[in-house]
Image (cartoon, rainbow, N blue to C red; front, side, top):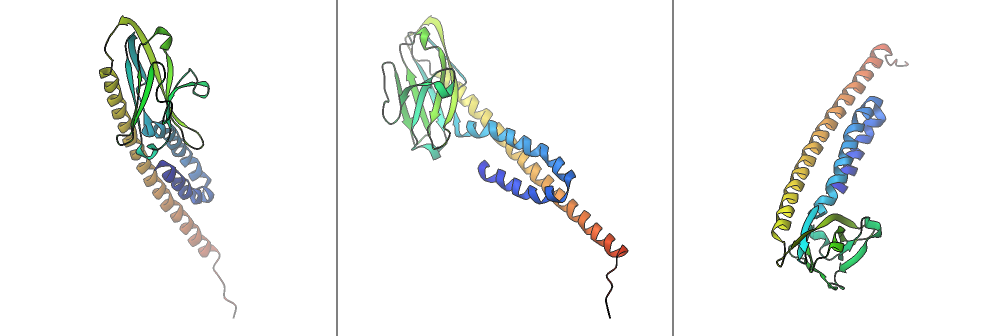
Length: 217
């Protein structure tokens, strides 16, 4: 939706920018604000996962990566490394769903792919990435995995689900704020259109009063 609304906003803004330099200056801030919000919300709406997950030594951990259903047929994978561009793929759909201690399952109906890591070691502590492959630039979300020294025998899924629910709530607040700001900017844009129209109309009236059109007989 944002990739449609942003060009529409810019198209509506161009006539005002050409008409008045002052108006162009006024609208630089809203455009930059909207671009900033877009950068920080689009990815989070398309793909979300907990920022930090804690597992226990020799235990298991499950990470849920929730995505927009428009990507349900796309390839998903889980990779390891501090930098996304250099990360090493651990497991991947639809092939390579399992390796030595990790697995990935994609629930296309729910829009969630789940990664499970077992027999955790201290060397597993690192940055990981939930990734959706697509043409152009992939969509990815960083997840930091911490390994505690305590020994566990059961998967730590409850904490992960709580973190996922919390992040989803934060995402919904961002989405609501984004729409409110966008509506306010549209109202401001409409007001500026009206002001510019009034200014141009006043100029025309002023010119007619000082330079009346003479008819040749």
